[in-house]
Amino acid sequence: MTAPAARRPRHVTVDGRRVCHRVDGDGPPVVLLHGIGRSLRDFTELHELLADRFRVHSVDLPGYGGSLPMAQPCTLPALAGFVGRYLDAVGVDQPAHVVGNSLGGAIAMRLAASEPARVASLTLVNSAGFGREVTIALRLLALRPLGRLLLRPRRWSARRAELSLFHDPAFATAERVAYALEVARLPYTARVMLETAHHLGTFRGVSAQWREELLSEVERLDIPTFVVWGDRDLILPASHLAAARARLPRARTHLFRDCGHMPQIECAEEFHRLLVDFWSTAGTEAAVAAGDHAPPGGAVPPARDRQAVAEAG
Image (cartoon, rainbow, N blue to C red; front, side, top):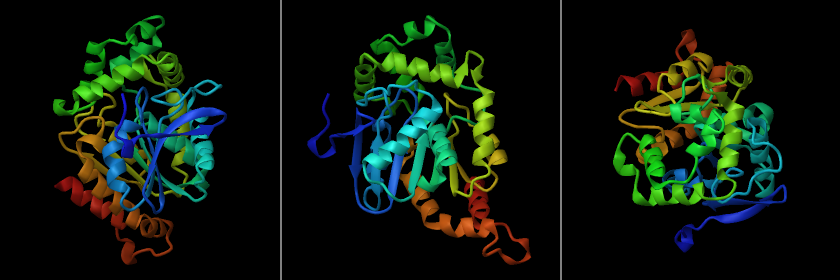
């Protein structure tokens, strides 16, 4: 399957291995990170909207889509380290706005905790890391050999997986299903996905140890953070947004109505507007939160004002 010439992903070498990525636009750098078993195509709509004002990098993580696996096991620290080396390989030498969906959100947090100088802001989209609950389809991957059996490429299972990502089934297009099946047939896809799933959790759900360690580090960071969720998410429930608010009280948050696991697809234009507004005000809000320009009388910081207005509507 090929993409139109103007939109065809390119390749770069990271750690001696081929990595598939797409780069467009000029301006401050943005990095878009997809979830487990997915690819950079999950950010096509947002990538193209952002490229008018930013230098946008969408990347297939190692062992997913068109990127070859790493030599080392596919753990969260290894994936975050890969993102840092990717940024070096493509010449990003200033802090980037990092946006991560699902597993990509946990990778973004791990990168920020390990190499905070690389990250201008964090945007966590239905992100892993805020709760144990996760769809049964991912919990079953922890049961060997059932996990490998479930990952055998079948058209019906590819369509069912695509449907689970969206509230509106119209987004589970024939093209998306066909590409998911194409990726599932790659020789390394099942191994990498099982490796990642086993590192992150068990049949009981997402492991508490790595979540607690990561969130304890992230909540100490002085990095502007935006957490968004779809209220009809079947993969990671929207109740995790409350946990995110509790652990990251300075973060801006937003709940998309009638939206599933991928707001960047189902609510692309609205998400784009919110994201650009967040980036345009993040520096000011960070200064207020740090007390550099504290409002008189202990007034609520602007981010909370906007959050309350957005959620009241």
